[in-house]
Every structure is written in C-alpha cells, then in structure tokens.
Image 1 (cartoon, rainbow, N blue to C red):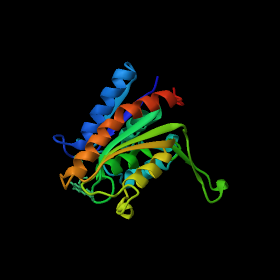
Image 2: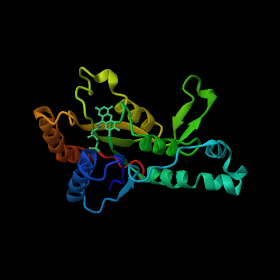
Image 3: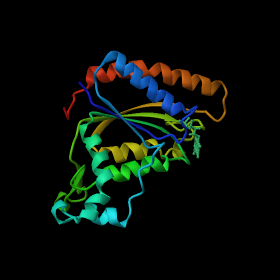
Length: 219
Ligand SMILES: Cc1cc2nc3c(=O)[nH]c(=O)nc-3n(C[C@H](O)[C@H](O)[C@H](O)COP(=O)(O)O)c2cc1C
C-alpha cells in the first residue's frame, strides 16, 4: 500500500488543466490500487499563510521552550507536516506562474520544510549541513504552462518551476521524481492539443510504473 499526498495549487477551480491531470491521476490510481489512502490538500483554494516572525522564532526553538502562542503559530505547520510524513508519494499538481511556482505552493513548502521535523541542520556535516529526516519518497509533478519549450528545450532557462519543486522536495525526503507537463496552453494551437493528449496518455503508464516500483518507505 502507498500513501499519497496530493497538493493542488491552481488558483482556478474551473477549467484548470493541472487539476484535471490530478483528477485523472487519482482515478487511475484508484482503479489500479483501490483502498490506497489519498489525502488532498488544496492550497490553490486555501493558501497557507506566509510564515512570519512568530513562526520563525517558534520553529527554531526547542519544542519544550515554546509558549502556548508559539505552539499555536505552528499548529497548521504541524498538521501539514503530519500529512507529508505519512506520504510515500507527493503529487504536486500546479501551474507555472511568472516562471515559478504559485505563491500558495511556496507558502505550503515554507510551512512544511521545518528544522528538526522534516530536516536537520548540523554544521559538523561541513558544507552540506542540511539532511532530510525521511528518505525514499517519490515526487510526481503534474504541471501546466502557457508557453512552450520550458522542459529542456529553447525556453528551459525560464523554467524555475520544476527545479525549485524538486530541490525543495528533497528536504521532505524525496529522492526520485516524475513529471507530466502540458505546455503551449496560451497558444491554444495544435502544439497545445498534442501536448495535452500526450500528458493525459502518460498518466496510466506512470501509475503502473509507480505501483511496480513503489517501496512504501514510510509505511
Ligand atoms: C498569474 C499567471 C501567471 C502565469 N505565468 C506564466 C508563466 O510565467 N509562464 C507560462 O508559461 N505560463 C504562465 N501562465 C499560464 C499558466 O501556467 C497556464 O494558464 C496554466 O494552464 C494554468 O494552470 P491551470 O490550468 O491548472 O489553472 C500564467 C498564468 C497565470 C494566471
């Protein structure tokens, strides 16, 4: 059994391509592995708050030294982190906004990447003091963009979406990733239609592949 955490980040509830990919992924998973728990966190509809000074001072304090107000400042973070720690597979369904991730998704990462909860920091490790607490998780990115050529092609230098999600997810224990991407949405031309068809067709084989190779590290 795999535990899946689905993060949806589009600000659109209607006509969202990334939400459509997510829905297709969930349907394919449910039909191949009915009963696997899928937790859905819709940050596009309800953005986690940006972290603030209270959050930071509470997070960097030992738990036993925190005041009631500081514990409260971390309440949502605790809840979101519990969802991450449970998950074997993180599915991030998101658009590209302004060449990177939507602010709501960044706010989610800021809430869940937390010292002594999802990563540890030790200067004794030299130039790489940060280590994730968990390992073995898989990241699935279901992404959409208005422009084309962002994945390893002529506009790859503008793509700050995928590299950022991949790097941030490492701190959550992700060590492999898969991507399904729709491009050229803003052009609405044949390239868009082809890209959408290809992305939809890639979902069932990806689910099969994940089910074959999933090791359930956090079961
Ligand atoms: C605020 C905003 C910013 C966007 N910025 C970019 C961008 O920088 N590059 C790009 O290729 N597409 C950009 N797009 C297009 C979206 O990535 C595209 O419409 C995508 O399909 C939206 O995802 P959704 O269909 O799941 O809502 C932007 C769209 C919006 C609404």
